Picture 1 (tube, rainbow, N blue to C red):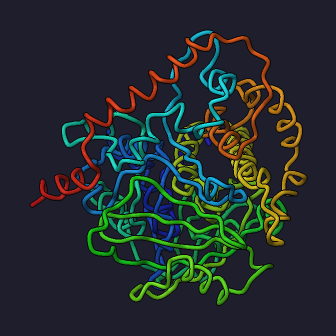
Picture 2: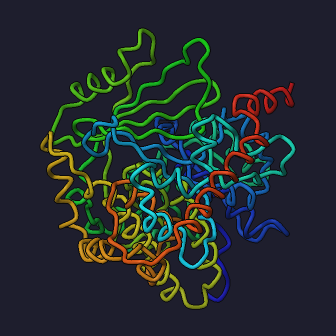
Length: 506
């Protein structure tokens, strides 16, 4: 094709479908209709609505879409997120349960050495967590402060932040915006996919036959379109990441409770439990290995973890297909979202992967003078992104010293299934993790700084032989604490920010 196709059909709504539709409409048609973009969604399959935490890059997507941040937050019951608090991922000590925080911010500049080396060489791990020593976000999260005020511009704040967001309401909000901007929408049930080789020729629904130049599969785990083109296109991550089920329970806040500014990931016997605080309710869930326990056992373990709340919504049980497609783009069909792959939500990357899929497709789709090259480039990049993310998630598990259940015993061995990670861990026993250790990969969010928070949060400290000036070292780390205290004085409480946010719409 010498010109981009003139029509594009997306199958499936929810966050994946509507983010893709809205982004492509903005990318291709902002200055005039060039491509007819339409979306069909099933009346029977609503959005899963569980993945409610995000990473900070989602702000850049929403900004690129031209969305009003305050309106977005109000209509989706969103709160601000500074990072993730990990609890109980190692055996408890005399000081209590194991805990560390993974924030979004860039680490502070240091003197002769980088800040991680200064913190390690000064043996600060003997008296504080790594995140407490080198980041400002940890103190703000501990004190319930917001990352921004109502005076900040959209998508800007004191520190990098993400959101806790109602996924169902987000889908509805994006749907309204996409339709307002010209995306065609209909409710239909796909009955058949007609194809010749690796080319879709038509989609048959309960309302007729649909044709387009290009098709995007946002149908979730079913992969209705992409699977019709290749039935041997799946790479499972079950060996490296065995958690393949989840149970979710929503609860109201107790009297006097206010939303936290961080996601909580608490290790349980056979997986881990999340806590995500929205403006109007709390989302809880348990991600677990179905080879270890049944859904009924998982639900009871989650309820016990929550203290058996008297009032809560009915539990929602989910099966998850963990892995990725070998090829996300085949012929004239592309898979985005759950139809392309899934990695357990430990680092809140679901919307981020949709964002990347849509953005990369837009740039590659423009180069239709050589479609085979564009497809190969896209597939290589998306495969690399999933593989790099898998390595980062395995890192969280393989460093544990927990051996109290079969799940955690297997978690220690998960490094064996992740090529190259054992070698990296050995290197990081002798020096700090740095950018060049990960260079050449495809990570777009998690860099050496993120790896450090997990490595040192999980007590994987290198043995450094550095000659530091103790007074200079102490002053450097104290300056970070002073900066955090000063920022805390400027920041308002998170619940005050939310109150002001919703008052503005009254």
